[in-house]
Image 1 (cartoon, rainbow, N blue to C red):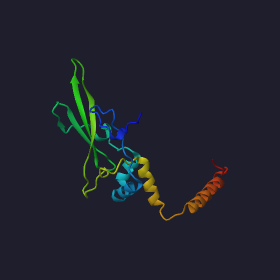
Image 2: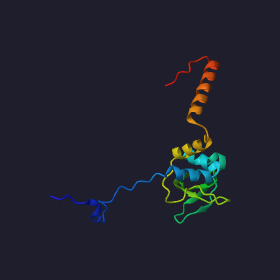
Image 3: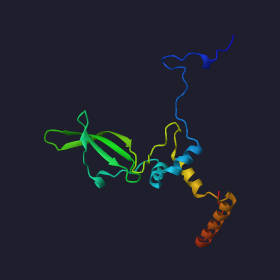
Image 4: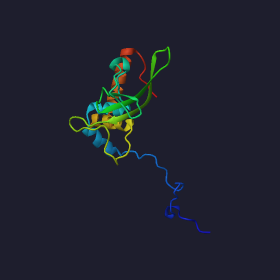
Length: 173
């Protein structure tokens, strides 16, 4: 009995024969190109893996509009990169004899282009860039021109000096 070649079979409408989707990880070269063209603030958010939005106590609570469903809109800009905007949707409800309660019902991120044309997101089609990849690229650029052997010697010297200063052993691992 001959084996059927699954790759030549037509795919079904339900998608049983489709390959797993997932995301493609960006190459190191693409990450390096991205790191070269964005600001330190954008790199801080990318390496951290999240944005720094002000709290309600820091920024107050001011609504900037109302959506089609009657929800109040609040926009917060990342205080680090200034390219990410969190859009929150709030609902207010007043019960008889009680104070009005407000609830955040949804939030999403929008990305805008900076004054110099800078963008937070990498060009599409390059794959997903993880915070670890960003950090590795930044570290590699900071250590460019140094050999691994020289870095090991320097680290061993620093450990020995630290041990002498604190009176502890330098043996690790």
